[in-house]
Length: 524
Image (tube, rainbow, N blue to C red; front, side, top):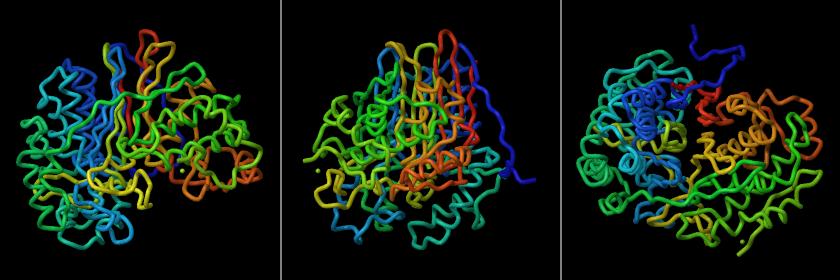
């Protein structure tokens, strides 16, 4: 039987509990989070356990060498930016006219492990080693590869197996043993991941930046043409940041500030606030798409490492600015969207206990990342340098010691001053679009969290084309086409994001997990 073939739609329900809840895109990782909660760990312990597990059980979307962002509610909302900077040796002159997708040039300092530690230092209850124990167990003993993970892994064969050069050899040996990806249901083991995670547990993450793991990384970098240096690793530190928010039809929507694209969510919602949106109304689709296009135009033009931005986010998050931009949304698709102001594989998880709620996202980018793996460690390095612009004068232009524009964004909702909970939709540039569609589903259409995730989605892609999931009615597609939108149905549901939600409603915790992944929500 084919474990990746599902010809019929199925139905998911929300899960309910009182003491704790977790949700993520892979069932074994969700179980790891629940295991930690049942041992007396905090929601943060559970989130770290899931994050570490996902580097093992869903390596097609993230890894130990990736980045992390998080929002944590403990009575106040805290933001963590654990993204790494570019090597100090990376300058525009180093590039061959463009940023390559694979190899050392797009590699930035891995930040996820430093994020695990920073979160654990503030909210951890269990020993760090105990929190990482489920991930180590899965890596050492092996696990049956899930169907969606297997599909992604197999697609990656055509990307990574043809790569030539000594920098790619260790990656292919670890992730494509025997020259192929593991199939759904096959047991995959990675003793190197287990060894690395033990080293991280014992050193409290320090080894990756100033210890044995750092030395291994630097040796391989020097031997195969990498730019990372000891100074780059030792200079890395995660940053606590102040989240940004907007009010939208009774909800407070929180996102992290740049270098991520969370501001696109807030911009789009500010624009949509002036419209009466109705479910399955073709006009409501048009309005949402246009608002998203306007928001993304500003985001791509102005978002960068905050130290290099020309404008503070507050300059384009005001309601007055939204009112001005809203006037551009008319009865036809805008022919070209420009910024209004001038000078000019990811994984998401949510967790909650009685006191703390966590929204966490981590990624290597483009699935496995750079294709560079540190020999003997299992550390697959990200290729986040692809987020840089090569345009001269752009605040996000590639340069030394800079955080690139980042796609991954955790979200959080509140209502009447009380936390509702964490939510997120992973998937590259789909992420802010997924956030907006989930919020609209909740606030405008009165959907429950699972229904808000189930609802068919659209996505604006480069060239101003609009992709539609097959569940969107054909009449809506024709209506959008008549307004001038370039619409196309897309059968690959993975392109429309994979979300997770954990909310508190009264005394109950409510969990939901996106049907586009093999994920799971659990509550007790």
